[in-house]
Image 1 (tube, rainbow, N blue to C red):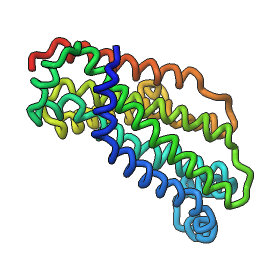
Image 2 (image 1 turned 180 degrees about the vertical axis):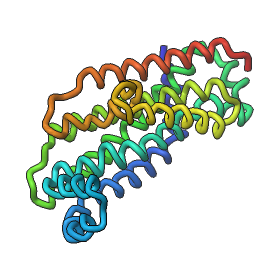
Image 3 (image 1 turned 60 degrees about the vertical axis):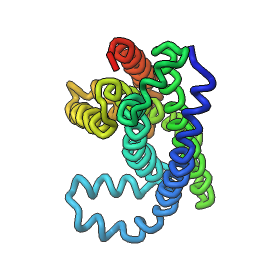
Length: 254
């Protein structure tokens, strides 16, 4: 179903996104790893000027380096910046071809629309995942130089959860890319839906609808068991959005 020539083309065109993504994400991760001592130094002052709820969370974070690193990396910077990256990769997948006027040429090739869409999705998913894992490994390597023993297993498992969450974000962005003739409109539209889904994570009754709530895995890094249900739901939703995007792509008249 995948076309290797098209896959190589997509990966080649996105090579600078891959390179810059690894550099930028790794830099953010290194800062997260090395900022612990700085926050410890100013911890008392930050606690005094914060509300009781924030002060309690600060004390919890600063009491354990592993928990601090996780809280600053996986559910915060990696997930937030990763959401932007996922939309940057997904929004132009189809809409970019339309805005550049290259869709007619692409569709004239001896490839089915399903093959084109799935190949583009695979390229985007590979680049997104490569940036996530490369930056995380750099972050953990930098953190290991500080001294405390790291929860390598838990960190890597938490990264898999975030990766699945960002693949779900990518799938949503890809779906909107098949609807819109402009990459910016596709990204903004997908972002609007993701913002609404993020809001669902605030309330216990609706938080299961939020891919971000599932991707954070807060209970797991707090000492709980790995949320396999969340991982399966995120991967299933990712695949579902990609297949839905392929169906829409097949039905659209370009």
